[in-house]
Image (cartoon, rainbow, N blue to C red; front, top):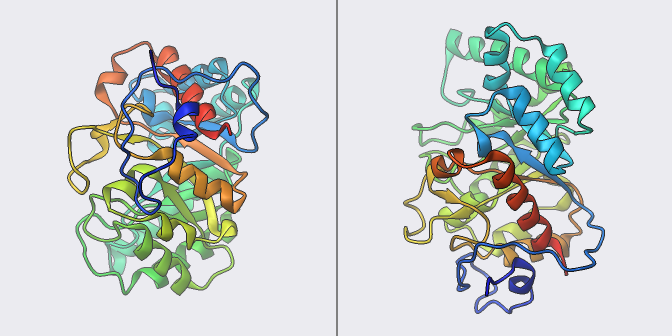
Length: 306
């Protein structure tokens, strides 16, 4: 018999302050016969079905029943490069009744100096304007890949927030568990606090929390109003934390993250915003995309049931 995520959510965790799951992996994510109305909006990060053309990603999200779609700016650039138009993307989002919780991403803002940093800010303006046109309230600000220093990041993040105010979108701070700079939740939150800006925020990610050994107490420390969005994903069941990268993410409930414990903390906070299924698994890319994202949506909803 398949173990359901709704059943898992009712099982007590053996440790209330870590994200390693002692639950058995499962395939099926079954909703109860009379599912409750849930406060969050369920979105699809298009990395989950990356090989699909952009307009097909949007269509699939609508057909599967998602509330929103989290788009990658590079996908939109590619669509335009192939002769497509932004208006087509806008129309498809509207036709399928979707919101855009955030777009991804602005990079290298913490890596460059001098004239190269000015080029990054110029690119930020283009990306911010595009995200705002698509109705996204946030754009993800990704920290440096190799640069280990963090002291300059609050000032740089403030620069992005200023650009965001000009363009009508808010950059939200991201941490990446396999980067050398900001790789855990506590450091990311400290930098957001040091930026000391009313528009600052942090985007949460279950995989990066687990893979960086961030704790549930680290999550509890983030005020609700500073959380922009939540990425949900699971981790390869056979590889230890701190060693995994994006392609190691697996379908919810098939890995080793105690997702139920993390969502319980979000519920305690009264989290009622948006969350996205964000997987980068090449095996899933070869499967029927509608089946993959339909299963993912069922898993997200099952996790949020009481």
